[in-house]
Image (cartoon, rainbow, N blue to C red; front, side, top):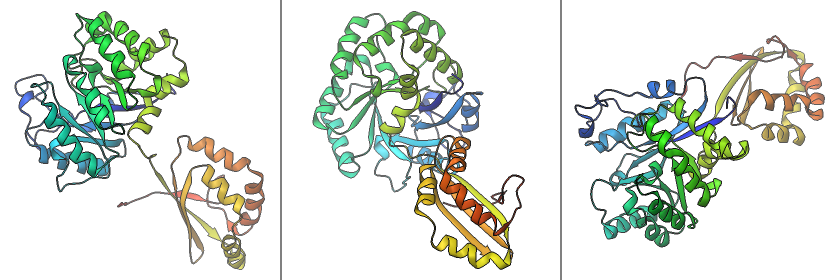
Amino acid sequence: MENLKIIDTHFHIWEREFFAMEWIKNSEFDRDFTFKDYVKSYKDLNFYGGIYIEVDSTQKEKELAYIQNLARQKDQILGICIPQETFFSKQKSPKTCAIRKIMHKEIPCEEEILQSIEKIYKENTKIVFEACLLEKDLLLLEKIATKFPKLKIVINHFGNPDFSDLESYAHKIKTLAKIANIYYKLSPCDNFDIQIAEQNLDKILKIIFSYFPVEKLLFGSNYPVSKIPPYLWVKILYTKLLNLHISHENIQKIFAKNAMECYEILPKKQRFSQVTKIKQDMLETYKNLHYNAWKEINDTLKKAHIQNYSIYHYGDYLFAYFEYTGEDFSKDMQQIAQDSFTQKWWIQTDACQIPMGENSPWLDITEVFHLD
């Protein structure tokens, strides 16, 4: 489990000084749950990032401003799911990837929901619809999916099943699993705890894996509303999936890969800056090498997830900047070093430089400011 990459498609956070929430008043949730608290809840697991899900606040525009500002600062906020009502707000974020309509508080009006989704879908055909509704209303999603066959629809919280009648639940799941654009999120229901998990989780998973293909299953924690903290929920779910003889490859799809595809999450960029010294009598040789850089060198760099690579000259120094978008930097750097063309290239470029690093001509330097 230690190498398992985790993308949490369902987390909530809030700080009460920024926006109000009626439903938390005088409850155990009537305190701040910060992004720092959330990340710590994964302890030493390989937590890549998560999708923020709107929190049903009473000040939705303020909530929107809060999470958009935070998302600009935190790379691990991979996407934002906003309240359906705020989609046409003047506040925009490139990380907005989903909308949600909470439909379990009142009887959902089918016509109103369809009209609202239609307006949004015309504006953004890549938006994901997060379906938060009770089991009795699950088949409403069949109508939405039929009207919008390319709209990705994600069932939240197991579909909030009635645990006393899982036969009826299984029938609905069987129907929805046949629809190509409906996904299912393995996120606990509100107030889901260890006792409920022990009594019902095996039954729920047996139903889900009987009908839904692995490629349409997503991991979510429902932090902090679920009674089971993310670290423990990962361990419980991972163990249950192994018991169902789900392969490690498919488990990785559930915990991360499917989320990348469903929400069209772009890889996180790591920025690197370096410095080295140039031999003045070799400066023109070095420049000419790079004016005519070998195609094989550029291809190797791109294959290793290196992009936006630049080298600058000033006085006795060369400064380099590049971005890395892969998942295993050390492994990709080893592959570059083992490439025969790169080795020949380095023989020529190393002769032009005065090394500043311990095992490399280049010395990594620290970023002090960045603005996207």
